[in-house]
Length: 400
Image 1 (tube, rainbow, N blue to C red):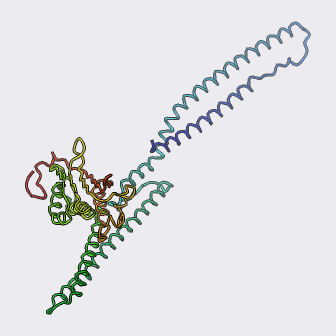
Image 2: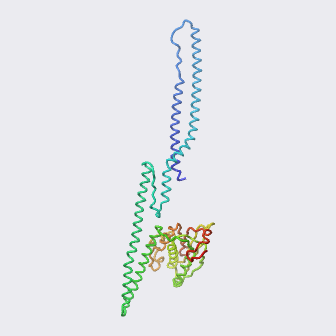
Image 3: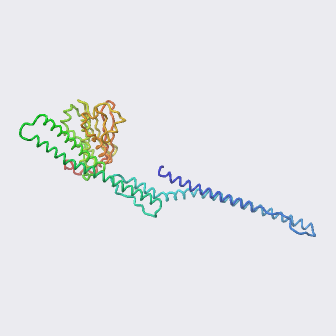
């Protein structure tokens, strides 16, 4: 048990120290007892005129001394045996006492560990706030609180920078787009080169605008900032995304197959972010596909009690290296020109999916298909369908 390792070591240390001190005390007692059993057996000083009486008295004294020595030895042996038994009993008791004392000593550290585990990027404002004397444990807790304060400031600064930069850059982009529209709308013929250049610049401006929007969504998802938490049917989001992209699917000659949507697969989360999650996964399957290929979208409940909901999107395409597929969830990671197609992708699609999935306490699994293409599996916690059977549907406004 990893949490009890330090406690076990402290207990073993306490018991070892007790046994050493008890053994030393028992040894000292044995030495003192053995020393006391030695007595002087010298003849009485003086002379007597009656040798027979003196001899009889000397024998009686020797007999009494022998009896006294035997009694002393017996008592010493009983004391040593009793002390040894008491030491063994106390050794057993010391294990329990040592375990209890070690637990009391380590209790503040366990509380600090539990509190630290509860603190994530979403609640960096929380602190350990350990009360007590100014000892080493409180110094450690105060140091961790200071570290959390610095992390919170750093996260807030990063969030503000991304949001402010994205918003500030939108203004000049809008101005440049409006200038292009005004230039093309002027009376008179527009040179072909000018029209071509304007169309190219308009496309690049749209791409930059989409990139800025992706930055905002990524920053929002990474910090779990959403207040529009509602109950959604994930299958309806997927079906809506496929319907909205029917022209793109047809333009690329793709075939949609095995689209299984479980209407009971409901999740709770941000409507905006979950819709973006589904859109990005399906857009990724359309953009990075072979001409005339296929895509498959399935939504189903998992587990005996329908504890999770899975969105599985598979697509055809080139054979990918499984060891590098996981990198696709990182910002601006690509797997070469074949993976990026025209190279106009922002490289943020699947990283946004990963951030939104994490913000909703789900898991993302990217797998390379053996015959080519990619399998994306998103698993999210499911809401209790039985408890919400009569709740209004947030997408239709009707009772289910």
